[in-house]
Every structure is written in C-alpha cells, then in structure tokens.
Length: 279
Image (cartoon, rainbow, N blue to C red; front, side, top):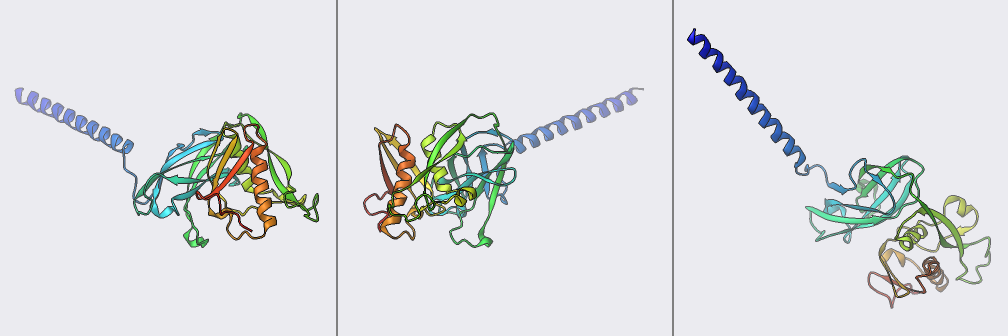
C-alpha cells in the first residue's frame, strides 16, 4: 500500500514539475516576443505611429532604417489613404551617421490633407536618386484617421496661363484655396500644399507651378516677422531664366506672407542664401 502511495506522489510531483516548467517556458517566450530584436530581413522598424493607431495632421513619424535607405541623410515618408492616394510627404532626417549598412534612427513630421477614407498608411520609402524602379522599396504602417479632425483653409499661389496669358509680369501669381486638417504648423502645411503643385482640375483651369517637383522643406522658422525657410537642392536644379526665378520666389513668399506673423521671407538652399536661384 505504501509503495502505491509513493508511486502516486511521484506522479503528482512529476506533473507539477512539468506544469511549472511549461509555465516558465511560455512566460519566457512571451517576454522574448515582447522584447524581440528586429528581424534581420526587416530593413525598417517604425516605432511611431504603431499599426492601427489613430492619427491626425501633422503626424510625427519615428523609427529606424538601414543606412542604405538614406540619401544625403534623408529618406521620404508619406501618408496615403486606403486607395494609395498621396495625402502628404516630407523627408525624414537621419539622427546620426547614415553612411552605414546598420540601422539609423530617423524622425519626420508630415502635414497631410483631409483623407476621404477612414484608414490609410504611413509609408517609409527608400530614397532612390537613380530613379530606377529596381531600386525602389518601401515599408507601410497601417493607420486609422481621425475623421472628426477640424479643417482649416490656406492659400497657395500659382501662375495661371488663362488669367495671365502673356505672362507679362513674372510675379503675377494667383491664390487657390486648399482645405487641410487643422494644425499648429499652418505655415509649413501651406508650403507642403504649394510643393504638391496644382491638381488636375486646377491645371485644366490654367494653373501651373514654376517650382520643381520633389522639392523638400528642410526647415522653417518664423521669428520676429521673418520666415526663414530652407529647401534642398532640388529647388534650383535645372532652373534658368530670370522670369522663372522671380515666379518661384513669388510663389513661396506669397504663400508664407498670407499669415499675419510673416512680413518677410528668407529663402535658403542647404544653408546658402546669397547665390541661390540665379537666372
């Protein structure tokens, strides 16, 4: 009888041991999953926003990407609706040495127009100055939009071949009203709208921009009535002729000077102010 009892107790202890070991294993697995390192086959890791997070304009984007995704310390980050329509785009800046094959931290702030879908994506794109599709790559984070976000109106300025068919005055530019999600960074949001250029319907009405496509805002600071805006080199790439240069300056200046806090605009390109936008 005693032997039967001993065998019974041994079985009980064995079962308890297995249960405890299994519990420790599952807990360790869950902890590892929570703190798991980035998988080597993922070249981008976005920490903000998280998948499924509700976002509104402007949105802050942070994460890490392989240095090979950057070009001159930047990589493009965009906001898309569920139909993959572009709502806004801005360069993310590397927060460290980017000429490496290891991970590099980045951050960006993007103003985007009001979406027509409740869901969309934040897309981190590999900067591809070659323009060759075989080097394209991107990483999407699904997000939800705050459809109750307040709307505000801004003006952007373009040339118009209907209102000014002879283009006698190079600084003749005309305002178009745009609706954007309400934001504290309204001046930057207006500039982002300007850089998008006219929509297809606006083009049919004769509106055109003199600003190159793909221009990026590197910084915008407004102090004591002066707006200091810095662009990347794309702003003056291939630009020629005094008329076009005048029109570019007018578009930027008038878009910023619609705000009462701005009475003067200083434009720079990669830190240069004196020798930029030459005819």
